[in-house]
Image (tube, rainbow, N blue to C red; front, side):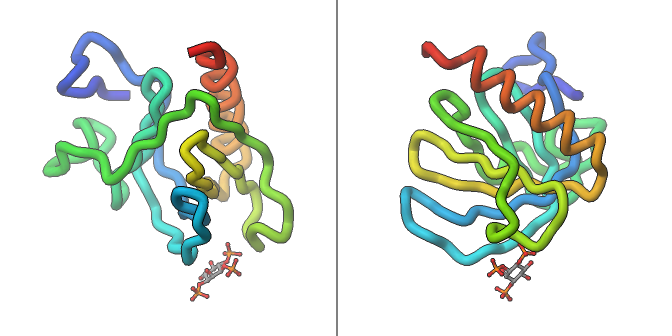
Length: 128
Ligand code: I3S
């Protein structure tokens, strides 16, 4: 993964393209809007950018800022139940701030790696 301009010496732990939608924002249900997002895990933050991104520079060529960021501290991840989505390989991410996201990839190994990474991050930062 590329380093962010803010922390050039800190490479991000993980990045890639995932399908993402919010389902709840600040505790309120919102309409699903699946988008393909360049996703970066860095420290206890998960950052999303719209579009596929480039992969060579931070959030692609002309995006310097992520579309949105979630704080994983105090959050929870689990495999989404069938009633949350008809898609395969869906992770449900709940933040302490009351935002719920669904994260999906068609590729088994990809989503399994993200599940592991997110779980690890939440565990690592559990006492912050
Ligand atoms: O949970 P839902 O309402 O069945 O989610 C589907 C809808 O959001 C649908 O869009 P509309 O807003 O036009 O109904 C999406 O196209 C679907 O992808 C959503 O379901 P899945 O099962 O793909 O998460």
